[in-house]
Image 1: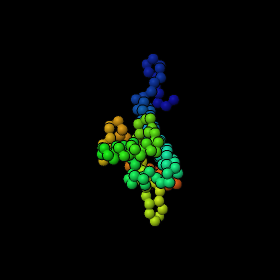
Image 2: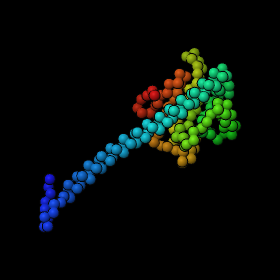
Image 3: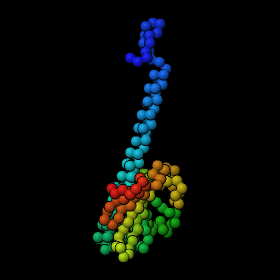
Image 4: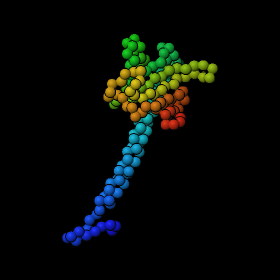
Length: 175
């Protein structure tokens, strides 16, 4: 055993320096674990948003197959999920579009809001849906219980062929 010394009664003990070294090592390991936990938590939240994007793509594609056009083509403006802008007419129309899609909101608190829009042009046409985190400072004023600032800078998108892209981890990733 390292620097252990017997006291007057012959019992071995540890020095204060040895105890401090052990505490420093435990502190370093704990800080590394917290960083890894935060990264894993953020990635899990992003996967949750990706699942929601896949669901939104599915219900919009079903509408397209049944009606021959995307719902945004029918109404000529984007549809917003999990957010209200505070403009009664616009929010009411979004609610009508969500009902036409048979949209079923998640049962738990969502960390993202979603906007779908139709794009057309010479390069092709289709739907694209974005997921934006509910963070402090957005143009939409979220309730404190809805805000998750750990997701600031993360954006997801699902395109016409159901490919999901994640932006904000330093580059564009495909899920």
